Image (cartoon, rainbow, N blue to C red; front, side, top):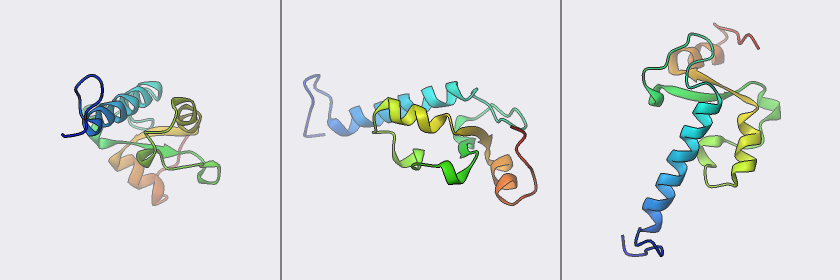
Length: 98
């Protein structure tokens, strides 16, 4: 906490809040619940899943620091899935109905 912004907040803390706010905003845009089963109890159990992996430009979890416009375009290519449905989709057990 040695390098501070003009608001006396360290850069790491400020960036952590920005990333959390952007992730929350993305979840809201995607409905805040699992696209398949509707699970909505714990946001940490939800993940953004690219509908078509071939159209994926970048991994969202590593890119919250990018401009919001870039993030928003990538979010449009995704659905929100709970951890169980996400695993089932990747293993071919469950199919996305889009």
